Length: 274
Image (cartoon, rainbow, N blue to C red; front, top):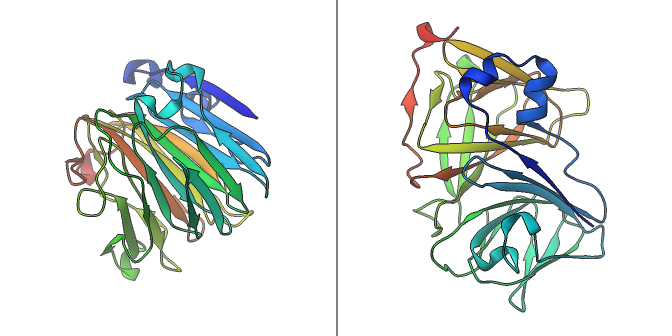
């Protein structure tokens, strides 16, 4: 029922020497969403855990994860849950929450076991925590909307911020997703890095025949990953993270590190990209 893969941190000099398979083995994540399974990746970048939970109309209980070193995962952690499937139900500390597609549930440190049920497909993110904030369902109406870009530059998009200081309290987990308008495919150009925080991406709402080209690496020596639907990327603090798709797509972004300042980033000039 529970499968956990550990990914160790890679420095930029080592990353420069990796071939395509090496890059994918270290940064690309696939196969998260399987019926009746909890599939996790435990990353050594800021100890972020990402994963997929698909109860397939049964019940799946998330409790002890050996890699976290505690009796229950949320003993020293917080949790963000995005439903990318049909309506489902998640039970935390004896209280059940109906979660529609596109909504996020936050569970704070000390909440105990978490039970997933219904027809949901749950993307789960967890980071270490130092304080217990209350469990909260964050709906689309609650989320902070930021509209950016333009059709002329192929990047008209809306950023929906869920775990964000202006929406809901968390210790270090920032979380939301970005949706593109039809005909727009470019995300975050010019690119940026933020050495104080790592990031993870899940690409979804992508047609089976479409792909996203995710760009990573040091600005002066970029690499790329070819992403299919419901595949994720671990983005280290030293790496740029931007991308373009062969069609419109949505991606969930999550950050962990020194702060929860969404705008804390170091921009990279277009002429410095290689």
